[in-house]
Length: 303
Image 1 (cartoon, rainbow, N blue to C red):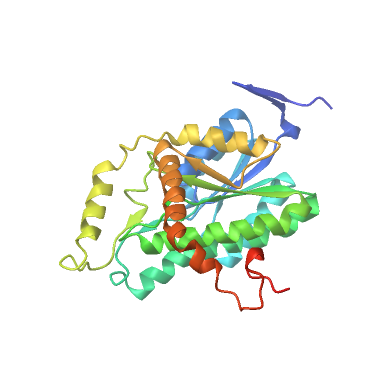
Image 2 (image 1 turned 90 degrees about the horizontal axis):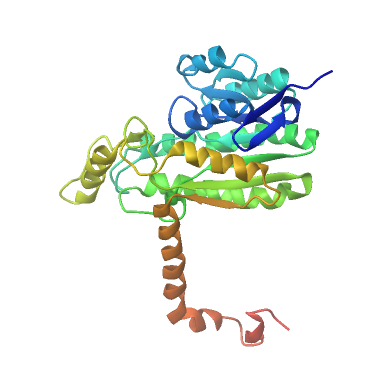
């Protein structure tokens, strides 16, 4: 049987050699751009979104390569059904991309309990449920790669964006642990940390508190106004970011963290230096907190 050969730019391969990508949150933003770039190159993609109508055109344009499925990541039954469908259609899930999510702004006091919990249900627990459902298939097939879409906010928290950052901090923590747990099963994990990119994050994917406390926390309104002003004007090109993600998946030694965009990289580098400087004056005091019989030179380990 002759294999169909594809060629796009620097990518040359046979169709049955290529990985199958499963992506959540493909209606807009990174999910949509990544799915389109993958399909243009010739990868097989299972694209999901809460409203399947928003992605049905992918099926029409790429009938052999694209499959779509309605998926709300907060619905565990749909998660299982979507993953089963992917395996049924393509036989494997080589790359899982947890992209579904949105931003919630507001000082710690401002959002409602429901808003806070829903933020975690979507951004964190939704991603965790998809991962947990996909891992048995990846182990069965002998490997895979999980890409978790975090943010520069998953490394640096800002006032009036604490809950969004908290969901991304949590996602990064679980990703670090997961990477250690599944390494022996040939499953790789990469945390993708975008800075400002020209997606809809500042528009339909961003929410504010139901009521602000502007006299107490004026930064929330400033933040909301800022995102409205820069919406669709950000410097980052999501299609270029998509190609970097593909390169990472195809590389022999993918990184645990993948910061994307000059803004993200420089901010993370500055934050690392800030943490180091913050620790320095108190390093000795923190070091010397062991019981007297402990050997301080070993960092508090007892003899």
